[in-house]
Image 1 (cartoon, rainbow, N blue to C red):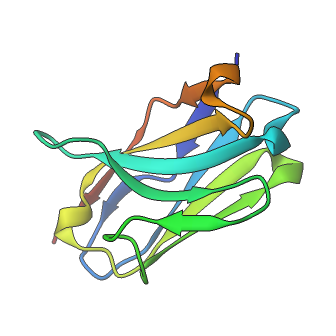
Image 2 (image 1 turned 90 degrees about the vertical axis):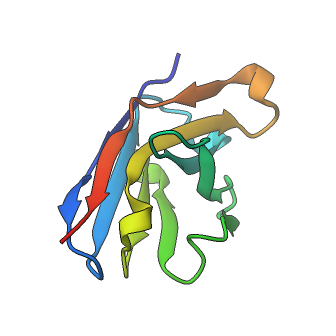
Image 3 (image 1 turned 60 degrees about the horizontal axis):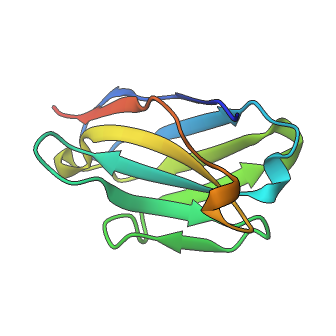
Length: 119
């Protein structure tokens, strides 16, 4: 069982920045593809960004050009740097860990961290 703990959310003004962190409780972090998703009230969960075990990244359309995902395997942590935040970025941001071979070998979610963009 892998536990994921997100942190770094909060209230920020439009145009501001936040850095989210997700710490994983596993020494085999390097075998997991990691991702950030978000869910706003009344909306479906959507992809923000993913990063593979090899460091390949993929971004949802809303994140391209503004957000950057990265990982530090030595710290078992994945990060999401969010810049130029907009009110529509307001959501609960959730961390996901999926085993690189198949989700059947592990697919875990964190509890989420709230990001609110408002003046």
